[in-house]
Length: 77
Length: 243
Image (tube, rainbow over all chains, first blue to last red; front, side, top):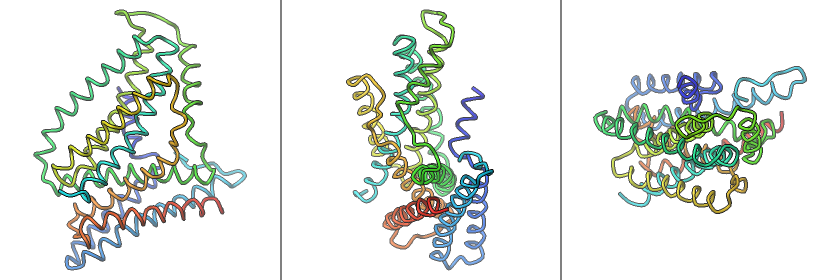
């Protein structure tokens, strides 16, 4: 059962840095939403754009590490 | 409830569940072919019973959670789940990760099962039963999560989402029975790219709803998010391939 639980957690997280960055960003957007409650479009754009940017930076970083001769891919890559 | 509400949930549940069912079917086929169908089917049946129990236990509890809170939690989980799939699909598309190969998984599982000692307890082979149980339970949990998650927008979405998943299950089980070998012809890597895009878009949408963001165009914003995620995925493949 421990292995099953581990694999269930693995459904959501395999590169820890991607998961942490996404959660932190959602927290930032929640903060912006609280400070500027009258700007839902801004919050929506920040949420979507930030998540996409985080994904692309993660992919770019993973690709760079994977292609480096002595580099090792990040976990889950 | 119109097609704009129903179609994205049903199609996302269908596509995502199709991938999960194919993965489970590969393992169950390997168990059945190598160690016998009785153990494979017993493991599958126990996992299906556990899954039904979990859904019956947790399903009514979800109805008690305030919708905004549920949307936020489900949205965050979908975001993590979808981005993980999309990232892997992009890295596969760029050639940085090996493509998912059901034939190779079937051969590897079969080899492992042949190495394990054969024993019988209560009329079944414990190793074979546990292998099938674990595969069906894990993939089944993913299917259940996907159905609940893509239906988080309203109670009326649960039936179409469940129907999409059920259709995928019937299709995969039917094909597995007919061809009796791994469904390697299913374009799993392309499907995973598409599902990663859909689930990530749902994740952003529900997270936003949970945070109180009123999306412009309401549900139409989901289509824009799908378009944005598709563009991001394609850019990601080029970016990763160029580095």
